[in-house]
Image (cartoon, rainbow, N blue to C red; front, side, top):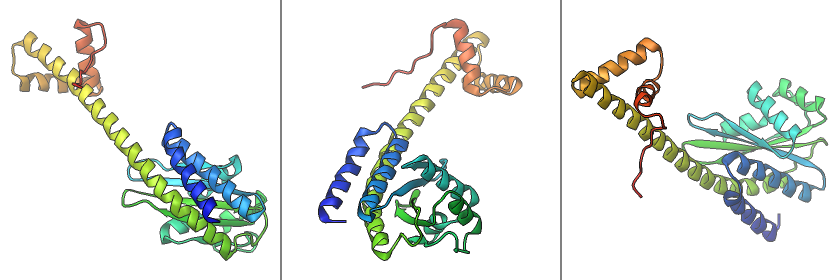
Length: 244
């Protein structure tokens, strides 16, 4: 890739961060851009998928096409292939000819059945809490030469930097949502405890014990039982007020 292509690619990735609604949308845009860049430099159609693994989160997969998404999902499910091994070893892995490759027989059989003989996995370093890998596919054998691998690796470095930022933004938003949800649950529980204290003329500790017992007896979450108690008095939804 030329310097101009690299600069355009990096600008495009940064714009994706602000123009997409969620992390899945960003990954979709990334896969499409990777496919576009390598297709242009190789002169043949290159499909791309990206798999993002985050601690305590489900793997997120996006692709430049339905077939790219399908092939990556199959690889993740089988637990074998260049994408999986690239992630484990932290270096690019290549399938030069799926019809002859013996390392990952099940996955290579799927590739050839779908009309693809070349595949390549490029790992993206994201830090301790997440990692990702780009998975490239081409119909001809021996498509991913050393020059192609280097182009993909350079793009992967750019994509990794942009994805780190996207993951941090998403994580911060999710933490804020989780905190807000926890505070809202705490509000309704505190209100229910206050009602139980007033009705039974008991302490807060005793009121919480009564609430927990009701939760256990009904096999319902504590905040659900508390919400039901509060709604007997207040028909409208309980609100948590955050000072601005």
